[in-house]
Image 1 (tube, helix red, strand yellow):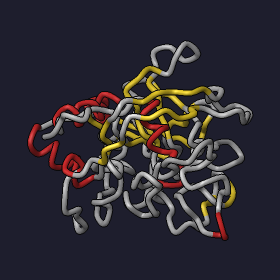
Image 2 (tube, helix red, strand yellow):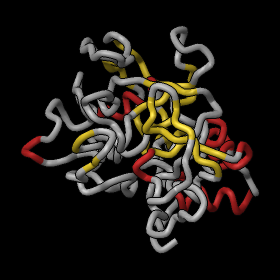
Image 3 (tube, rainbow, N blue to C red):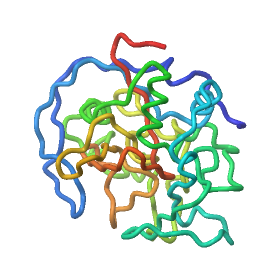
Amino acid sequence: MTQQLEVRAADELRLLREASFTMGSAERFPGEQHDPPRIKRVPSFRISPRAVCNDEFAVFVAETGYLTTAERDGWSFVFESMLPPGHPPTEPYPGAPWWRRVPGATWHRPEGPGSTLATRGIHPVVHVSWLDARAYCRWAGGRLPSEVEWEYAARGGLHGARYPWGDELTPGGEHRMNVFQGRFPRHDTGADGFVGTAPVTAFPANGHGLHNMAGNVWEWCVNRFGATRPGKRALRGGSYLCHPSYCRGYRCAARSACTPATSAGNIGFRLAADVARLR
């Protein structure tokens, strides 16, 4: 891998002090899940300023010999347009045919056999299930954040803001996150500078010093989603595939969920910890 981060995520967790904030939103968008606004108290905790990257996950695998869910199952979900020309036919996902079940797709072969992590060492690790994310966090001496912690962190100290930087999607015409521009799902123009994942510190940090709390990759949270999706774990933040035509997951209040064993090319995670925990 040609790019490296100088420190591991566990070495630089940001301390966020105990506070109350308004969680959720009164906004409603068709087909999207979030909770109505209510006051939440969040105890002090620590959270990484960025998602776990490929270089960091590689250290974990080298030290432990860990095999991810995708490696054990033999496949993971890849976005159709990410597949190279001439790729063998793959099975589309019902209701979202742009997702393809690709044999051999894993965290270190993100588009399947023949793909590599060259130039993507500091991009977020993907094709990691909730189970994989939990295993990494335990190894690092931390844990996944709760949804309450995640949303408080994402808001960056702004009260009721739609995005981690405020209410305007592109303030002054400036892109603040990595999402899908163009005609979904056929053509991403890359107007924000990226097609696919971006480096974990590609965009300016929010008021808490945290990068990419909107877009780039969905991030696992520790808790279950709730009664409407029993058995699933919460995801936050949206991804490089979010487009207003079907997904506004990049809003601070937006929620999603998948089963703990799900992996895909747009799902990653970041490390959190109790205040006293260090590795």
